[in-house]
Image (cartoon, rainbow, N blue to C red):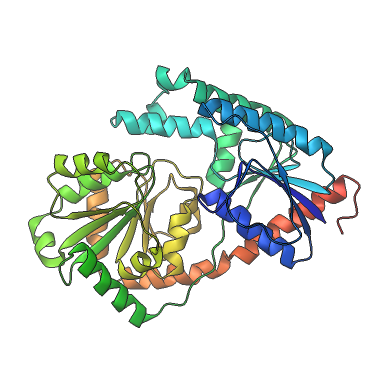
Length: 392
């Protein structure tokens, strides 16, 4: 089967990009041939893969999105392939994977994050967002996408429900959860990682290391986490010495200001760039991801793969694979600082945190990357057959 994949970049700098690179590798191993329809190539292309370079306006951002959707669709009409597979904001592919979720749902959540007061279901999109060219173009591309695409992959039931909520006439939507292969849990590596974190970030010995990872800390609930952190009682602080390590934000000044606002300078370590995330996944005690919107947060799968327990919100599509208190910890209202603080304190002071991490690691064996590709491959073969092609 010849598969044409459509995305702006051939890269590993984002979640969708990493997924595409790994998907191509796996499909090649299974004997399929690949055509890439991309604008930029940022890493080596595997032997035998054909690349079609799509022109695109780089600036402003809204024109970048619109021009790629338009020109990539034109390339699809001229390329020879059995089935086409697009990622996100594109027109024309037979199958489209909504790895980032539904933009209208995203707008709801980011509006709430900026307001910080109303419950999400009562929050309306701001005028600024409603009339922003970037958001208008995103909505326009999605409107056309959901009208024309015959097969849509949602990475969670949350995304599926969001799409159906805004686009009732959307095409067939199939939920295929993200996948990640579990790593080997190694106690010696865990101890070594912890010691290195303590040395590099000046974390006290026997401190409880809480991990927060996000490139968009506002949307992912950092301020709620800091509010919860600041409300820990003194006895808990004395007994467990909690330290929060934040990773990933490009604008560190905004985090610094929030940390000062909640008087947590001594308790928070902010790391801008990390080349070795394994160090933190192995060395931390708990990953906290109180997000307001995630189609399916891969950061949680990454943590699970090392046996690191995860606390996340029901607004993360990935939360639907957990059983709260068994193989993960779930909060329904991440903006409720009292509830979030209590859940964190109970988790750390209880005796089941390590067991939850181990069960999360075991759960991941049911969501491996190979199992994800199995389902994607099956869908692509089906679509190719529906088009009257051999699929071979």
